[in-house]
Length: 401
Image 1 (cartoon, rainbow, N blue to C red):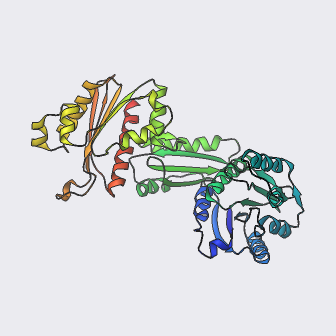
Image 2: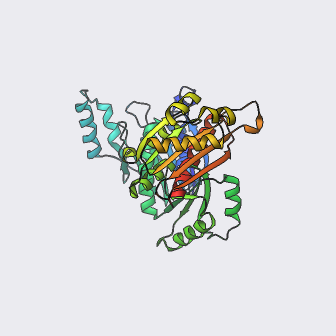
Image 3: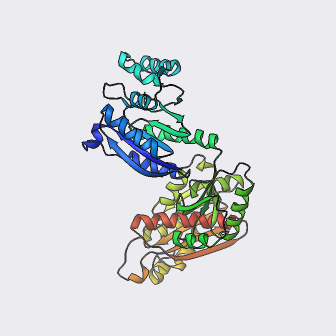
């Protein structure tokens, strides 16, 4: 599906408003196999809007417009689209009632010009706006899609996602995501392209909420072929898959812990609390998290985890020996099913051989199993911290089986 974006507004062309909507729309619809081929920005001028809209409509399958849905005189997007498509403008009583209720509940008087926000081209499907007064809408014309969005990015995102949910249902589009960790995008892509995959499916990779995700988009009506493809990819990448259709690796870990009635405890050095922050950003984290310590200094490792001063002196804090003692101290201090620790260098060191060197320790109490992982991570300080966090979550999931 090929698409175009028509941005409408003097403020965008004058540079008073940065056009972040193009990026937002393009990234969001890409997940549904819709690609932006062209974007145009025009002034709040009727002839310019109609001319640009008609040119794009003749050329593309789907047109997204952004801006010009407000109550003021220069908000003329709806009027222009109706004229371009030869449709009458119709007052939507439901939208009008919602507008009236909004103004009454906020203690403000609704003016006559606000009513124009309840007027739409005939046969439009309305999309309610959870963050503003301008409802979005979409319509079909000559087999093509026209999606009309407001200007503020938070409203665009809200309405766009609602439209895509309806679009997916109407077009019977299937979307699946395979979540992977511990494999780079280029390596994954290389192996992916060597597979004999069904050409009716769009299979792409991108950075997700815990690593590299494989996204599959198709119009498979019965789902059987989709499942065959999922099975093929699962067999190929089984060592790296941590979940399916997840938007966060921390959420996947929490879901697995709760499902199995298990708990976890963390002690962090180089990640400085990022592990616990990422974990507790999920609702119900309290059902699985026993504790999280940030033992950043040598002193705190000694005091909180009973790491021996001699071990620190002989091997330094970034060593397998200290990782083992941190894990042992955490085990002795708290009662949990799984324990995990981090210690390492998240920033450049004088000895470049140790840049990004990190030790991750994990203990499974039920099976009395300990693993110590020694890895080199690359990137900026925050990138390394995030990558260590993701890798720790991934290895707990793997250990759980």
